Image (cartoon, rainbow, N blue to C red; front, top):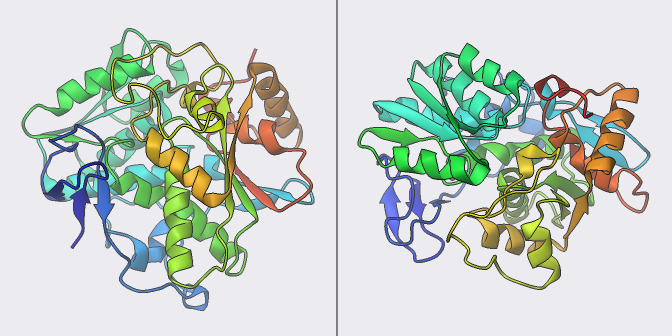
Length: 367
């Protein structure tokens, strides 16, 4: 049975508890979990057409909260670069992959309420899946969040708490609420079940490419949930003997808020004052990755290094150009979701996949 495990000090907790972080260091949990059996690409035909088709490698099964999430198309953009269209998810972003895992876990634990914090997409996803599960939900967002995203959160019946300040202030407000008795903190950062949802992004690529992976996978990185899920999946596929080499992880940040890229290129293992006083985020069109102090910074940096990957940054001008370029190719993607295309769209030396993480309807066209 899976248990929570603190990667810093080895503390453990039962996954049936509502403890949202390590009680010793207050850091995020990992999940001590190993897949029941290896996947066989030839055994997947006829299974449910959602991420739950990979049941052998998931810590939950038989979901009651599914909205059919996953199995998004993989479409060529150039001779070497393909796009994974995760903006076609039920709530129009890749966050559905992890949100369904959190809502399913919460449904089984029957808390008094669910709380989460978000710059928008994770909040809309958790709100939708809590609605599906019949769970009361409160979503904390910064006061600058896109009105289209807050409208979507309210539409799903969640209570919206708008927090003055940036993404860090919002996270602190949600964590204070998470300490209340009977509260399940559906954190895409602190709860590792979310990462076991996002890892299905890579399992889908592996299946669609006939049991292979590209040479590199580009991922936008703020709190790092998609990147860490990708690292988890590639490690599992390698351990199961289903791939011979792990692809390089190319992490992309906005130049205006790029603490991890700076630390990586300085050779640092983490961020100064890693979980200390909140820092302020500079304005950027890539609001979804504008995270100045991600709690899993050390894990993110280690995952990129272990994969042989690197960090790249993009400016707002590059994001504007990339959004319009993708729209001219038929893909209307939100500003955060185009960051990877802005960074690697002209690559020609190896096969690479970029995620198109959120629909353009969520933010509109960048001014």
